[in-house]
Picture 1 (cartoon, chains in turn brown, blue, green, red):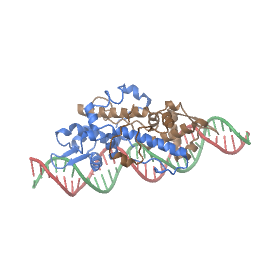
Picture 2 (cartoon, rainbow over the protein chains, first blue to last red; picture 1 turned 180 degrees about the horizontal axis):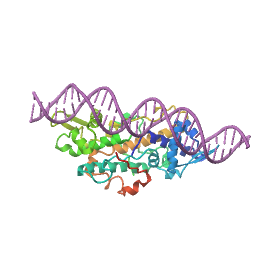
Picture 3 (tube, helix red, strand yellow; picture 1 turned 60 degrees about the horizontal axis):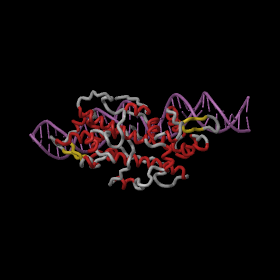
Picture 4 (cartoon, rainbow over the protein chains, first blue to last red; picture 1 turned 90 degrees about the vertical axis):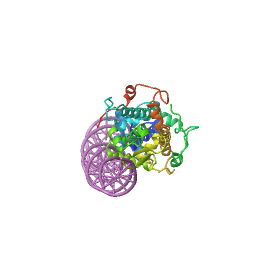
Amino acid sequence: MRLSTKGRYAVTAMLDLTLHGGKGPVTLAEISETQGISLSYLEQLFACLRSKQLVRGVRGPGGGYYLGRDAEEISIADIICAVDEWVEFTRCGGNQDCQEGKRCLTHNLWDDLSTEIYNFLRSITLAELVERGGLREGGCVKDQNKEADMSGMNASSQVA
Amino acid sequence: MRLSTKGRYAVTAMLDLTLHGGKGPVTLAEISETQGISLSYLEQLFACLRSKQLVRGVRGPGGGYYLGRDAEEISIADIICAVDEWVEFTRCGGNQDCQEGKRCLTHNLWDDLSTEIYNFLRSITLAELVERGGLREGGCVKDQNKEADMSGMNASSQVA
DNA sequence: TTATTACCAAGTGATTAACTAGGTATTTAT
DNA sequence: ATAAATACCTAGTTAATCACTTGGTAATAA
């Protein structure tokens, strides 16, 4: 799993699309203006999203983009995987041709972690994000100061 | 939150350190050999880890690295944050000087998501990874077929 | 004293991020 | 039929980052 600013741009743009998509298609020019992302860069991101059927483009005046399917059926993982390549990390290429069991162990551990993160991101849909106006409802952590928040304590948010 | 191959290298190296750290310090040369990471690159990663007190170096023959504190008290988030800079994404710089409420909304949504991912990674310690020999079996998410699971993402496994 | 290790700094080629420039194709409005 | 607005496409470009190489210095056990 790769999680970079590129993926954030895509998620943010898709959130914008979800929020404004009710009143007809949304143009990239609008998203560019609202989110402060260059138009051509958005075009590139949306080319990726379109190839995965996450968005649907309508040409001509009055055109723009719709979500490719319901916001309930688009996960954050879908979006990030569409624009950020899934890079394979292990040297043994997924095969079990490692020299030592130890080496395979660490590889497997990472693979599991990677899968765990993926499943977590897949469990969050655009619809949920918009419905709840955020992820923290009720007991979740409030993080006004991120630095202070990281320095201590456990605030385990229960995940799926 | 930034999650790249650099962070994976660091996590893998720390896992190696946790696994072999019981019998005295572990040299970077050993990790380099076992994990297939260049020695000098490891040195750079461990300089970051050391500055955050996640590892402790011992010089001289017979030297190497220890974990900076108990494996129970080192989270994946600690490791990734040590080597991958936390890049601020939003344009308004965390301030509330956005033009529209809508824009702030998407920003907040992303911030919440980012925090959620961070909390998730913070909830997983090195000790847990090693104890359980992986993340599956019982804990967070049900066991599943990984291949079928990842069919949604572009699994272009190009290996260096 | 010597070998072994951590530690440090500078540089390199390849890749990526984010953007710019300049198009073509399709559709609506006039 | 024409013009404007939009998606869609290709090829750059600058800066940053990745993973690594080179070539050291400092501390310490044998």
